[in-house]
Length: 71
Image (cartoon, rainbow, N blue to C red; front, side, top):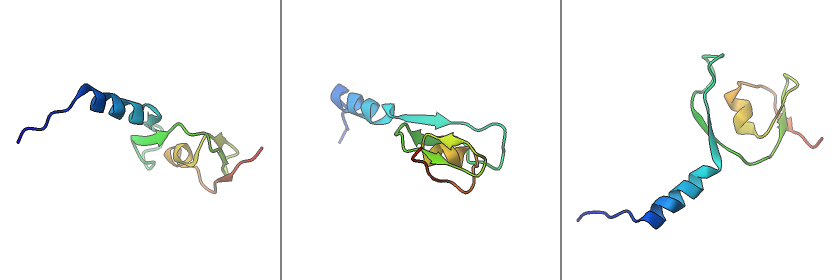
């Protein structure tokens, strides 16, 4: 049986992935590569003193000691 993908299913998939951003960290090879991070704002502050928009972006930057940031 052949599967048919309709435009509405493709549009839904586009909407679901529109809220994500791929981060490719070139500077630190030990960091995870090509992480699909959501664009949800849930800030964390890490030992490096940087406030990241969420823990996924902090992991992509290899930040350590991250805590929720309510500043």
